Length: 207
View 1 (cartoon, helix red, strand yellow):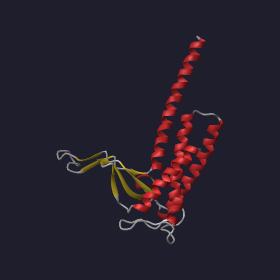
View 2: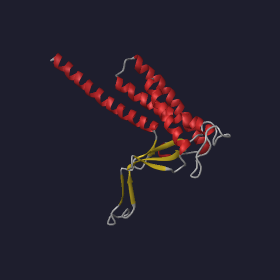
View 3: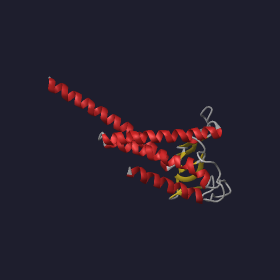
View 4: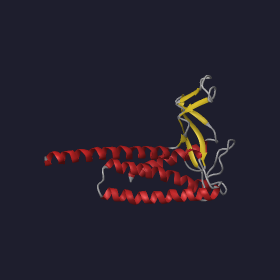
């Protein structure tokens, strides 16, 4: 569980720093690189800023995240007891850590911080906060526009329009979840190959 604690701690340190030093929309280039930026936005809902159901939807989403995290905790505990391969354990640990990092934002940031705006930097423990418990916004900041160009004029429908890849803005917790899911896929692939190898060995032994 140490990896979960470390990831959540790093995630929250980054978010609190951004929240208390940046205005909404503020952006800096990391090491002068145009493809790696810190760009502060806040996510009201799910991934890529998607939201549903207003305040009720936000409460339901946060509640689902909490239930999901509790399920992972119990499942992760069972994996450890069964001495499951470490890659799978690390994968679920990363997913759990990422989920917890974003849950903290949703649960507490609304009551801890004042509203971040394009004109004002948020402060902590000043007034009543900007939202009730369960309704805080998730802080996002990592931005990697690896390709920033314009479609050629000769292309139908999109010619002359701006094209940017990768356009998503995310946080450390999101990255942890993504890496965890990738490790799960790798773990499943390795396990499948091992099972196939074991079956072939057993067939050769039988023959």
